[in-house]
Length: 80
Image (tube, rainbow, N blue to C red; front, top):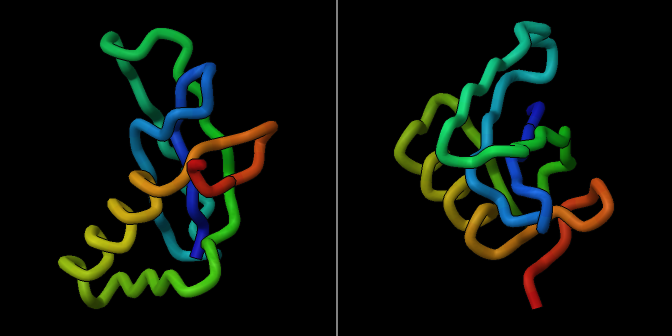
């Protein structure tokens, strides 16, 4: 699974996009509410299962990742 985090300059995650690993379709994000928004491809954290066949569970898992992590120097890191 390919996971992209959209975050501000401080590493706060404002959104996540998940797609199958072989999917080469780029994601375009236009944001007027978050100037300076950045995109970073990240590794799926251990213990997180992203199954596109279970959309409700997928959204729950992505929400947990976004709420409990931030981007630190281009790497997904737990919030302290």
